[in-house]
Amino acid sequence: MLLLSCDHLTRGFDRGPLFDDVGFELHLGERVGLVGPNGAGKTTLMRLLAGIDTPDRGEVRLHAGARVELLEQQPDFPSRRTLFDEAKSAFAHLLAAHDEMIATAEALAQATDEPTRRSLAAKYDRLNELLRHQNAYVLDHKVEEVLHGLGFRDADFHRPLETFSGGQQRRVLLARLLLSSPDVMLLDEPSNHLDIDGTRWLENYLQQQPQAMLIVSHDRYFLNQVCTRIFELHDRKIRSYPGNFQQYLRLREERFERELKEWQAQQEFIEKQEEYIRRVHYGQLARQAQSRRKALERLDRLEKPTRIESPKMHFGDVVRTGDIVFEAVDLGMSYASRVLFEGLNFSLPRGKRLGIMGPNGCGKTTLLKILLGEQKPTRGEVRRGSHVQPGYLDQHLTILPDHLPVLRAVWPSPDPRIDEQKIRDLLGRFGLVGEVVHQPVRELSGGERSRACLAKLVAQGVNVLVLDEPTNHLDVWACEALENALLEYQGTVVVVSHDRFFLNRVVDLLIVMRDGNAEVVHGNYDAYELLRAARETATQNQAKIPQPTRPAPPSKPKKPKRRFPFRKVEELEADIAATEAEIKEAEAALASPELYRDATKLKETMQRFEQSKQRLQQLYEHWEEAVELN
Image (cartoon, rainbow, N blue to C red):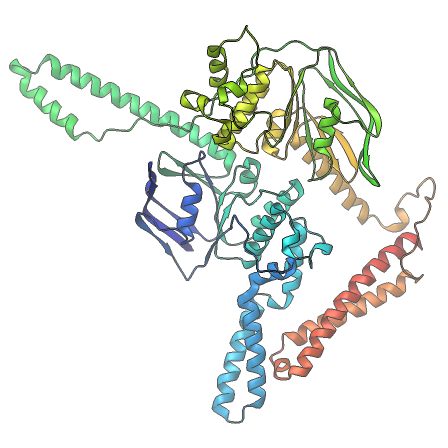
């Protein structure tokens, strides 16, 4: 089903059009990734589709009564609104319909004449069907599912929104949009501020949704998992490619090579025709030359194809280190009563690339600082090899002073062996050329500043790159250039990253940090995913083994303290079954039109339903404890 279409869209600003004469369609169930270099106009296009901005020319049409919604970038929440209430506000139309249905039921109960009763009964049935169709009787469960998936805890639900960080507030906006479920979702960088677990949950969630989606993202792994089509916005035009991001890369290169050959063949034909015309434009063959000239004038000339070019990056030669660069022995780090990690042992040989990943706050940056010797571990030690000269790129890119021009910020001073031209050549290796080298660092874009910082590390002569989230400020093509440069780098690399595509291409050793543990995986991110999937399968299979056949542990560990009074497992299972039956009974009653004609009975049923749900949750926890400790 066609939900959105646009024709001849043109939008520009002072420097000319961002895009010109753009047109495409979005259909039900399509998940389209929108990619292009920074500044190509991706966000502007999304704002046009959402009706927030107006095109210079062309139009956007919504079909079949479709509703479109854009993921907001800046939060603007009502004062003192809680997390749960803000997320639930996505159902404002359903909550209003529910209130209207109750009011209709009350009016129906008091109506005396038959025409009024018939009209109110029809209205009530219509509203009830709407709510049933939208699963409006389980809204709280939907809200909890999405908030948990995006990394919020139960303890966060009733906190005021102003107490959350900017990244958390951005996740609230995403939760509200997902719960709102518009027919067309416009998702601008939806995985920003999510750790890998949250991103993985979002991927699975979006794959199961029926809506049409247009997604702007620099997360190539995310685009691979979610998208069924890719739009490339480049040179003011949009081109469509079937499949995910990986297929897009292959098809884009094939199209470029094909179109380049067609252009070259046409250019060769034109040159031959022009040469013939020059030779015979007089004499007996002049008429034939004139005929060919007219044919050339009518020829539909092909434009020379272009592709998005990656900035050039190259780290150059480095001084050789010892065979082992870093060796961690029984390494651990704690703050007060909180353990970040413990028992970490690994050895990093020269020339290898180590990746570190894990959720926010697990201690990744702390581990980097311990390796650099800037922080002492609470347990164990790090042994550094000979001739190791590390260079650290922090995720906030603070190694360059804001007030200096790029050339002077990167130039190590004093060093008589290095002249200005060598620094210009170095900056050119990272795609920084022309007047940009004279701009103050503070005027650089995030991607330019990131590349200037990498150039600074080269200028310092380091042979071990320690990089904290190096792809944060880079577009897709700059990420690809950095990956290629690191693969060619002769030194050693330690990198913290949440970019799974980057980790897949670059690292050959991975430390995964989670819940106070740090696991060493010999391989890249896909190797870790295979390991994780195998463990999950083994756990599921173990759970299916009947209790008598499970092998007994060699020794009984000390039992933890009980939270609940002793009860037999069979008694708890009977209570669980009875409570589940009560919930089903209440759900059936809530779906009955008759209930809403009695406001008192409706309120009692809702209370009973909520109390049963809470009691069931407590019974489950009691049952788990009884199974473990009885």
